[in-house]
Amino acid sequence: MKPLSEAHRTSSYVHPFMHGLLSAKKPSKVAHCSNIVPEGFDDDVDQPDYKIDVYASSGYRFSYTNAYAEVKKSSHVSVALLAKDFYQLCVFSKEAIDQYNLRNVLFFQFTASSVTFFTMQLKFPSLYTITELARLRIPTKKCDLLDLMGHMDNLLFVASLY
Image 1 (cartoon, helix red, strand yellow):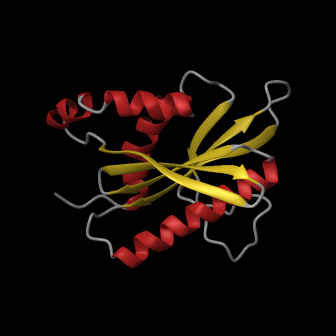
Image 2 (cartoon, one colour):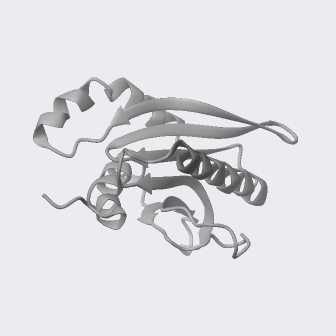
Image 3 (tube, one colour):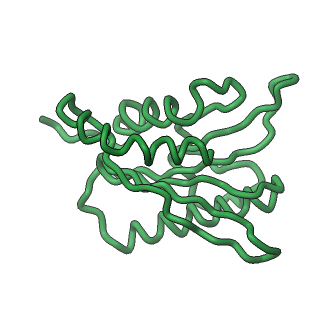
């Protein structure tokens, strides 16, 4: 079987999972694949692979982005590249907190079929904290569904924080 590309993995597994978890019942929240630089950021900043935008209920105007993600298609990724992606997600989250006056932002890293959820919070002026919320595998086959059932409490925790 041919390995999946990053775009295929994102559109086939990441998006349906995250959309269902975080934005399916909330029409003002739009989860989407985004390989564009977010508004208000410098052009030399790399873009997130995935994000969730929130729109004002009146007029469908963009309000803010409160979730970002990076996706890697393989589990054989260098630690340096994972650290770089984590750093980029931290920068996106910090800028969103500052620009949109948010209290916290959710971000997550996908590597192959595993996902790690984090939150960044502004505790005090200029003091940002990052907390790992949960780590689990996204089912890519029917037999993986049982493993996901064991993490329902973690998923509920992440969804309730979001």
